[in-house]
Length: 388
Image (cartoon, rainbow, N blue to C red; front, side, top):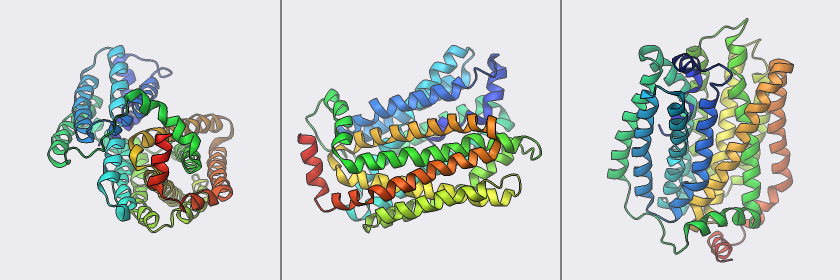
């Protein structure tokens, strides 16, 4: 529910543009500003989880999200809408706070499985948001989408207050400024973190390439699918959610490296059926399932490995890691629309395959780094790095 708040607007841009008399060229700011807010939240809010009670942080974020969503749903000026969308993105990072809380609460032998289970919810939110918002907007208008989400956020805030354990975070004497400054230091000193960050950038560039550009050929001649029909491909991609827990279990068994390699092979191969969009929508659906399954398998494995490496710094690590996710998503989105304008869908498929193949080659060249890092104690290494 939290991550879906970022993506609800994508199929609603036409309606929002008409409501505020915003030009089609400028309405994209709704999506852009939401992503800006999300990136700021990753950098400045998620790391707070290493300093304060994560239960209070999650409850507060979901409650404030409800208020921000009400402002969006009742806004009558573009400036108010844009400002509220930044706040919606800023507070949506509660999903990362919950991922870190899950990693902390789980036993080491089940951490990957638990993180994968929660990540399944993230996948469902990302892929179903467009379809859900389209259906609700058809029934009650675009404002109803955000007001409905506001009610859901209030329910979730109360649920988290009731269910999450108190004082689940580890005490630390570090200041907020020290925590923020330690993020780049951790990534610079630990090669495993750097490798996993680069893999995240490349796989999410491939992911964003598909989901940003796919609506363009599907809504145009000769396919002419409606927004609701296009949203069904997102539901097909939910099969990737099934892979998340499985990948986490394999990481728990020490098979994270090979899980990553196999997933990257599948990711590269998925672009072959995706390239057949104009010939077969069934082939496209198969490619979508393979792509999402592969991306989520790499994502869950990445998180399992970095959480194990530095248990004292999980909140700041997930904040830093997800910045690479955002960069990759942005690169994929910009590149995909540009390539489509010049080379069409085949060019987009080649671009996505190139991102995927680059990830596979990079994994192969760096695959021994994770194995060497596994020889020493992750907790000890994390403590040494933070002490330094």
